[in-house]
Amino acid sequence: KQEVTQIPAALSVPEGENLVLNCSFTDSAIYNLQWFRQDPGKGLTSLLLIQSSQREQTSGRLNASLDKSSGRSTLYIAASQPGDSATYLCAIMGSSNTGKLIFGQGTTLQVKP
Amino acid sequence: NAGVTQTPKFRVLKTGQSMTLLCAQDMNHEYMYWYRQDPGMGLRLIHYSVGEGTTAKGEVPDGYNVSRLKKQNFLLGLESAAPSQTSVYFCASRDYNEQFFGPGTRLTVL
Image (cartoon, rainbow over all chains, first blue to last red; front, side):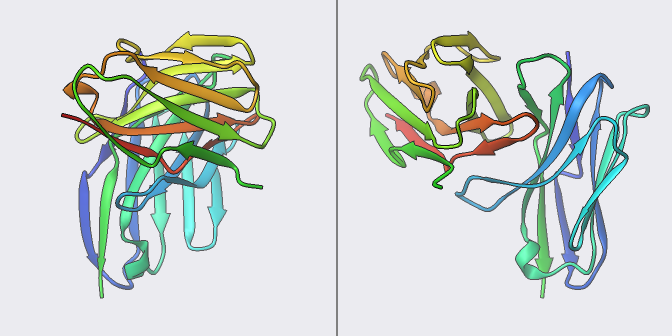
């Protein structure tokens, strides 16, 4: 059974810092991995999607990497801003045809001005 | 292009009442999903559908029923609500790779 773990559960950094959020998974037979952002009381916004054959994806100040062999993904945020404060969720889509996502419990990020 | 929409946004029920949550998508996606999100538990899959007229159980299906009579709609029903079903419910639809989520329904069962 696939399990997804995100560490740390919460993180507080001063504005301008570069930071890394971690996601680990137990089964390397994945179809893809998706990083989401969730603001308090809101829905999920997709940030980056990495296919199983890819090593990384970039969008603006965000860079996500994938290492299937070690069961790890990282989300790198450069030059953090207060507007980056949110909960970041990692989700794995398995190799079955159903497309179900298995989510980690998230990392809540606070960026202080 | 509205994407994925959910109705209602908020609802308060008494124990034993029934209700239906509606999810609609205008992206012509085959796959649709219902998740619930609870503090400390993350998002968990309730039911899903791989096409019109088909449904399947997810991780936490007990107490819920679903229907996919039209491709664009996926309904989640609670026949007899219980306090344990207090949660935020998210619907999603999927293209080949990516899932797109609705804004959520916040349900409280008293």
